[in-house]
Image 1: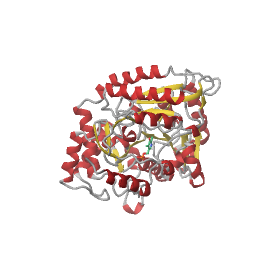
Image 2: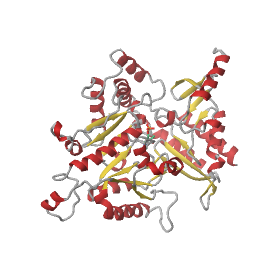
Image 3: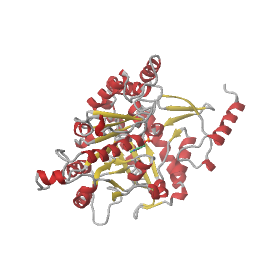
Image 4: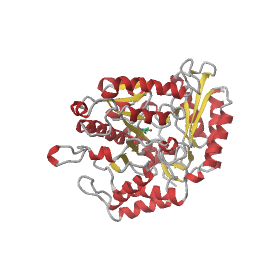
Length: 469
Ligand SMILES: *Cc1c(COP(=O)(O)O)cnc(C)c1O
């Protein structure tokens, strides 16, 4: 048994010294998790919580998976850190190869960093530098009728903008915040951010007047095309969260939208950055969300689930075409002058490689469908609750949106903290969840069992009844 007085001290130090992310510290109540096993967290008082949000969307195969644990221990006996500035480690090299084999075909080059935000920053800067260095003979010239000479004369230097959607979330560094658009988090920093060509979120729940579920995809794609027609020559890249915008509140895009975006970006000669930081590694039912619509982006950003949720590691994958635009003699200064000290570190790479091996060994993806179906059944039932305006699901990601009025879709004022209060209720029942405003999020590790899913959904339901009933 733990000495209760020392736990008391730890909680005091937690409040005094640890400044928690996305947390109002004046209201923070220390919750110290001491250990975990599978999908269960255990706090310092010995209380257990089922992890309904995958350690904030990153855990994949469960906590303390024996294969991943062993891989990290083995790596530790060799070396923990090797820089990628001019050298490498075999584990990191193997991981790069593994990712290339797994990713959509043609993404042959892997730039490692350490977080989702940095994976996106890398893609943004690569896209920008690509256009600076690409004047002729580059496949991404617009398909206009200009002659080769005209194109030669047409510099690509004015491609300094990005296109992104409202409510996008790409991380919290300033570049990522610039392309992001969650007003609650980002509006404050507006004066520091660069300009982005912005489109309304392709939301399947709150459709504009006159737009139906069937016409939504075309409607949003037409908007994109009109914008590209006007701005393609200024835009370095389009940045998208494939299939759904997670942090926005699990906002799902219409089916076919991603494929349409790829088609239009190709047609108008703009690069496509797919931010799969949240949706990658099986969460949507396939290894990568882009696979659902047979899309190969120019950049694929990966983080969160990459190491199974063990260690900070991220990767930005790109094509031969982008990569080759950076090749040249040293004096040409085409080098990608960007790096993160721990990017691609062998410990993280060992965890990531082991995570990929577990997908193989346990056939994780082929065992997912019954769980996805089970979650869907629960959502059908939960959707009948009058305070639930919408339920949205892609694979093992679900959002349950609470509304004051189902007819008008009027949200609860965010100050009422409905989502937070329901999650507090669930916590008391031993289920750990974290909401996004009025949207309850269920995003368990892929290793979740059907029984555990039942328990999570039951807690959500009783929480809704208690807080909104
Ligand atoms: C979480 C997230 C990020 C940021 O990842 P960090 O590792 O927290 O920097 C970027 N993009 C998306 C879509 C995310 O969900």
